Image (tube, rainbow, N blue to C red):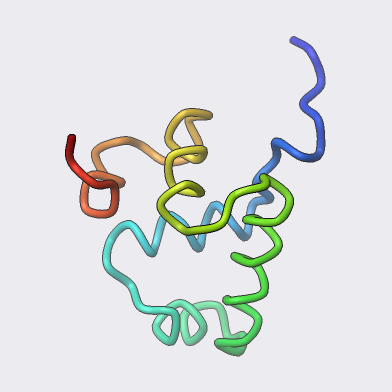
Length: 82
């Protein structure tokens, strides 16, 4: 399997945050769960968006689903329906 470019990666904590967001956890709830600040949660997501060259969370969720990081069944709550 070819090595993924760093620009295509979601790091484990970012995946955990996206997974919780897809189950309707708020940023504050995620921060409390991991004993980190809300600012840190937001920074993780901002870094993931920048690394993957997307401007919003919906695009980041699409990447996470397409790459198999989170199951589509969870993301259905987030992704717009066509």
